[in-house]
Structures are given as structure tokens and as C-alpha cells.
Image (cartoon, rainbow, N blue to C red; front, top):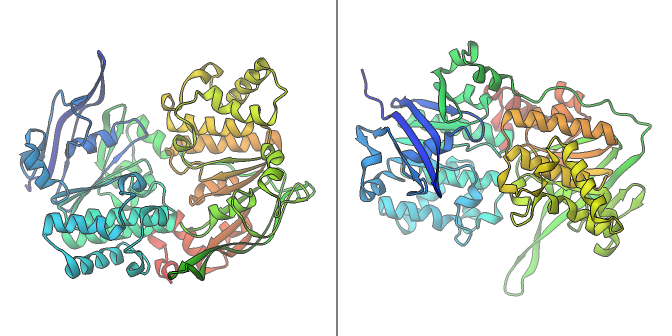
Length: 542
């Protein structure tokens, strides 16, 4: 019998604040064999990431502690290892990919320096040798034209590109164990498929073991050999992946397997008024070079898009990271400059100034991807939701405004009594409901939803989709729904645009595109979303 590379036994994690102690992880045990991938699955707050961070002792000690348990890597208990011993293990024998690369990468250093720093520290590589290895890593993780990206800073890369850089950094030293903490959560389906394919390939080539943390069971089915299902700090079920999916024993496992956006969007009604219309919309960003900073070329982020969106209709905009989806949404809402005709409720607004747009803002709202980033941590939920009313409906009294805030919260399924709390006191799904309430309180006609479910658990995603569908039917709202998650788009969108490199690849009724896509790129997207094994990655990369 081969000893596991990692053995966790009766591990507990406690957090101490003031005089209070809370148990985040409660006596969990699991093993990872050499060359094996084990998935740790559960919703937000289940203790997955806390368990993973415990392996490398990355928790905020001394406010965190381990009341019991041991973590043995190659037979050595890491919980008892000295700082010097841990430094030898971290980044060399065990590496970690975090969920949010923007907060993990240094915003002040280009990616060549950040990857090179790891190679210099652990392998002594510098200069040309380091650059060769960096280019090799960037090629491995699918960064296009890596030579041109060496001097790029994190903010100059798309979300998918930043995550690829994080993976390149994690794989730089060919670790024995890779801990991947939600590495594909916010990525589009094609990038997700490529990353999973890459991780499986590297694992097989190098005999690497992997602990894969996720809430997405669709990913687990494709990558994991065994599954540990976790909730409320405990592992409630464990076993081979095929067995867990075929015959789940625990009620929570069955709940996770059933949590997927369901239902169909309301049928399009061609008699309803047009809310948003665009003709030949272009957003080109200049590329400047030379001493005089002359424009030498353009990045064509959006290149000649036409669309029409009616009341009660959802237009889904899908495509890979960097395809121009969000840029199109920002152009339509006049948050960035563009060329071409944009009409909102019959008014041509493409030439409107910021001042001219202001009276229209209450009818044109945005819900962003990350509710924690878009909600001010210094304001109560009541103040956050009321802020728009103070600007657009100044005649309201304090009591009237508070009543509107309370009604908006109740409409999105939150208790109005919670309005005096702050964003950090809510879960991720609740924060997104607050963001939706902030938009709905102004009674808009058009709402741009920019990846509003991508960072949420599967069950919470389904709840938010149901909420958005109910609000749309109740208020006859027009949605521009930007997403890389085609399962969510399928549950919401009547019409659909598939974008790639700023251009429309395919456009038309969502049902037709989902059931009978015409273009190879769209077919590859569908394969990546609904059957990862069938995805044609060659078509994507060309």
C-alpha cells in the first residue's frame, strides 16, 4: 500500500475574535495519493479554503489556531514545521493558485518580473535562461504572443489572462502538490476548458497531485478522481467521483447536484417598444508609440455591433475574456466613448455629454460582477440603496425614501430590517441581491448585468436567476446580460450575441443558437459549456 503524499487527520480550525471563538473546520480527514486529484466541494462558508490554507499555514495566525489534527506531507507534519521548513515547502514542493488573481498579483510589477522572481528564488535562474523558461510557461498556459506580454502589468490583462499567469507562477517549479482554490470560477467556459485540460495534462506528465477546491460540480466530474463534500466545517461525504455523482448518499450532496439554473426566459414579444438600439457601434482604443506618443494602431475592442433590445427581453452577450462584452455594455450605457448610433427609448444618445446623460441614468442601471467591490464598505445598505434616490428623486422625504429602500430590499428577497447592516455582514449572494436592489429602487427600463452570477455558488446562482426573471416579468425590464456562463444565459436570454475579438460571430434567437449553432466558434463554446470533453479547442485558439 502506497503512502499518500498528503494526509489530513482530524483537522480543526478555530478563529478567535475578542472573547469569542468560532470553529470553521471541525475534525476533517482526507488523503491525496501521488498523481491523484481530490476535489473539495461545497458552498461559500463551508470551510474549503480555510482547510486548504491550513496546509501551508497561510491563515491569519494567531487569530486562527488548530485545536486538533495533523497535516502530513511526505510523512512530515506541516502544522509542527518551523518557518524555515515551511519556506522550503511553499512554492517549491506545494504551490497554490488563488481564486482572484488581481489581488494575488503585484500591480506594480510586470508579469516577467513576477514569474522571474519565483525562478530566481527557487532555481537560481536569471537573465536569458529565466526569460526562456517564462516564455515556455506562458505558452503552456495559453497566453497568446507571450513575448509581447512580458512587460504587461496585471491591470493590462483580462481576467482569464491574469489567472493563466497565476497558474504559470504556480507551475514554475514543477511542484509535487498543487492546491487550486476555485481557479476557474470567474473564467469563461473556453478558458475554463483549456485550463482544466492543461492541469490534467501537467498532472499526468509530471505525476503531480492536486487538491481542487470548487463549488462547480460540472468541473469536478471532469477533473477529479475522488470527491470530498464539505458543509458547515465538516466533510459529510467522500468517495470516487463516479460513485458520488451516480449515487449520492448525503442530503447536502444531493442538494448540490440539483443546484443549477433552470427554467426558460419569457417569450419575446415583437410588439413591445424598443428600449435600446445600436447601429455600427465601435470602441477603438489607440496604441501609442515613440517619443511623441503617436497613434500607430488601435485595439478594436468593439468593432461594428448592431443590436435591438425590447421591453421584457433579455439579450445575452457571450464570448471569451477580452472579446469586448463588457466594453459593449459600457458603450451602450455611455460610460465610455464610442462611435456609431446608440438610441435609448427612442433618443439618440451617442453624442450626449455627461451632463445630458445624467437625467437618463435613473432609467439605465448597472449590476456589476463583484458585489463586494461595487458596494462601499463604509456605507450601510440603506445608504447604498438610497444614494440614487437622493440624486434622481430629491423631492422624496426621508420617510418616503426609507420606505422605497425597504420595499426594494423585500422585493429582492431580503429582510428590510437588515438595511442598517454593512456589506461585509452579508453573504456573497445577499450582497448581489443588495446590488440588484440598488438598481431596481430607481425603477429603470434597462439594466446592464455584467457577470452578476459568476462568483456565486451554484445554488445561489439559481436563486439570483429566478429573482432576475421575476423582476423582469414584474417590471417589463430590458436586460443586457453579459456572461461567460452559458447555462445561466440559457435560463435568461431570449436573444443572443456571440462575440469574439470585438466582432459578432453569431447573432439571433437564443433558442436557435443553443440548439443549432451555425459557426465553429459558437459550437466550441457550447461544447465547452455543456460537454467539456467534446470541446474543439483548436477552433478557439486559431
